[in-house]
Image (cartoon, rainbow, N blue to C red; front, top):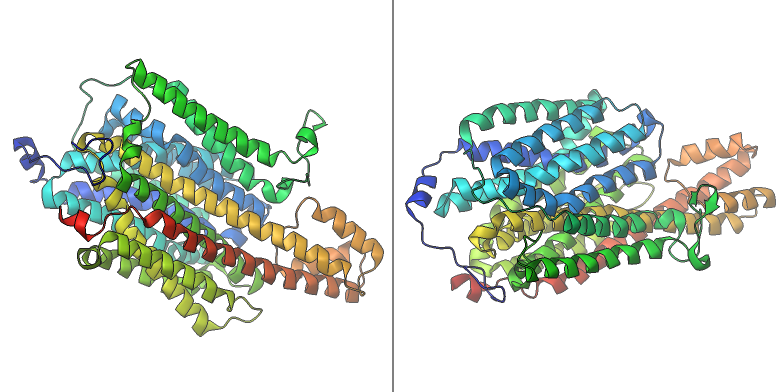
Length: 555
């Protein structure tokens, strides 16, 4: 087993007789686990292309759906370490089954949601809790069921299932949403969950813990609370302001403005403080020889730590882009969910192809180089997309940019999961799976929150500035819009802005001028959001420095 300070992936022990028995496992177990992985990942990509329909169906806003998407991944990120440890306490198979049952309940609740509040309970909370149990268990069950080449193949199939869910989600969700309703996607998930629960009794090993650890509830509360507060602060920055308070939150009628500033930086600092407290608490647990929530020695393995950071960065850019592009295609161009999925299909194709080709490329160019090429492709694609954000779609440039983006994402998907798991000691795969899930979902929630925050802030500032300088808009309307902007301008179709202006008493000419200013501000905000994606992709190259190179791979 590798030591905590090892600079190379942990060596895998020679297979024992039990391990050889694992190698005889057929394909059915991995197909069951891959089906569960597919469902876990499908949700976010489906929800993104269904934004406009969900907004209309639930009488909510784009910001409301953004919050639901963020909270879903945030709940998973906050609870993933706890879910991994529960796998050690309850047994991996039992944790997998309980998590799937919870997830199915959440999917059913989501399908029946009458409003945003129930959607937040069913999708963001209940499904997130279920996924936090299932995802670490999938990784641990692969290790318990397969060995040698079959284990590598199994990890590849599960990674391919995740890539397929990201790639096909926009098309599946778009077609179902357009032809039927977005709710049927979640009904379909319930059916898949029931099928997996029935099949797992016959094909998955019943792994029971021999000496189950005690659950570190204090550590779980500190880690989950820290992550939740930090990401929640970023999510609300577009509404509450980063420094100067905008729309001020209230508790019992009292405005929350600490020292006259926005509450956002205080939430983020409180989150960081809780995470520091988590690190100190885990050190105490280890010193007292008690069971910690996380074996911190894993984070001292350079390739594993680099893989986790790169995975979080990949998810941040990927989910940030998946939030921005449907907003452009649906609210600016007026496409429905299915047409949105078709427009995104070039990205889906190249992502899937690159994910399959990535392992072979790594044999010739090293995982580090493949990952660096992936981030470079993401950055190039984001900057190329900047030129395509216009009132009329440049189909050729848009398709090329999306294909390049899918190529970069697929290369990263093909490498990072394998790097993380192969860098872990074999007896720590459950905890490593929890770390991987935490990094993946933390990056996803930050991507939706941060890029969404940039989009809303740029839209609000740009629209307000344009209206104030527009001589066609009377002073009274300018002042009213300035007051509205303090709470953040919502992301809507231009026609809705024009209708709202008419209802507020503006003349036809004034309403047209206001809508024109909004359209210009919306396009500029989308460009700034994509520019941020490109910049973050370039900065993410920093995290690839300690990924395995060809020399390490051959040791």
